[in-house]
Length: 83
Image 1 (cartoon, rainbow, N blue to C red):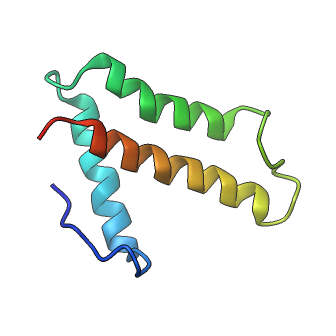
Image 2 (spheres, helix red, strand yellow; image 1 turned 180 degrees about the vertical axis):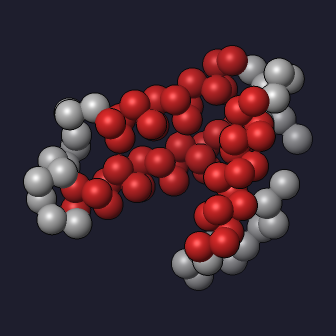
C-alpha cells in the first residue's frame, strides 16, 4: 500500500505514479468488488466525455478539474477498500 504522507505538502510525482500503479493492480484484482471498480471507470469517462464542470477551452482550469476528478477518484477508490 502507498505510504501515508503529510496532507499539508504537495505529493511528489513518484508518489502519484506509485499510487496509480497500486490502483491499477487493485482494479485488476478479482477480490475487489466490481462496484468499487466503477469509481476509477467513472473518473476516466468524465475526463474523456465532452461535458465538463469547467470546459477544457478555459486555459489550465479545464484540465485542472479533470486532474482533480482523477486524483479524487483514486483517493476515494483507495479509502473505500477494506484493509
